[in-house]
Image (cartoon, rainbow, N blue to C red; front, side, top):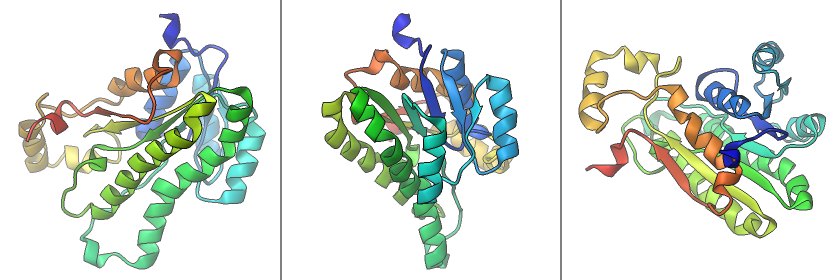
Length: 244
C-alpha cells in the first residue's frame, strides 16, 4: 500500500473549493499530500485549506502572470491536478466568439498555463505527476454541449502531447474522465426526473456517481502506483462508454 502513499508530496488542485475538485483535494489529503487549494476566491481557498490542513493558493488559472506568481508562492509542486473548468449549455449556433474563447481558456488554456508553470521544477527533479480532468465528453457528445465536448476532447489530446514531451523526464501525465456525478453544478440535472430516468437506463451501473468514488482514480494517478502509466485517460463513468 506504500505505492499509494503521498506523504511528503505537495499537490496543487485547480478549482478545488467545490464539486469534483474538492473531492480530488480531499482524496489527495487523505493519502498524505499537502494540498494547495486553488480558486479565484481567497476566502473559499482559505476555508478549504483549513479543513484539509493544506495551503490556500488563490489565483486565476486563465491569467498567465497570475499563474506564474501563484505557482512561485506555492513552491514545490509534486502533483498537479488540472481540474478547473466551466460548462455552458446552449446550442452551438447561439455561442458568441467571446463565449467560445472563455470556455476554451477555462478548460484548455488553463491546463497549458499551469502545467507550463510547474513542469520546469519537475524536469529539474526528474519526477512529477500531472492529472488532467477530462470528461466522458472527451469521447462523446450530446446536444447543447458541443463547445464543452470540443474543449474536453482537446484536453485529452493535450494529455497525450504532454506525455510525448515530458515522459522522458520521468513525468507521468494522465487524465481522469468522470461520467455523470452528483455535484452542486449538476443538481438541476439530478432533479430533472426525465434526465435522471434516461441516465439510469443508459449507465450500466444504473445511477449517478458520487464524487468520493473518484478518490481511488486520482490517488492512483498521483502516486507511485502509476509510474509506468502515461498518456492515458481513466474513465470513471459507471460503464457508460462500454456500451452502445
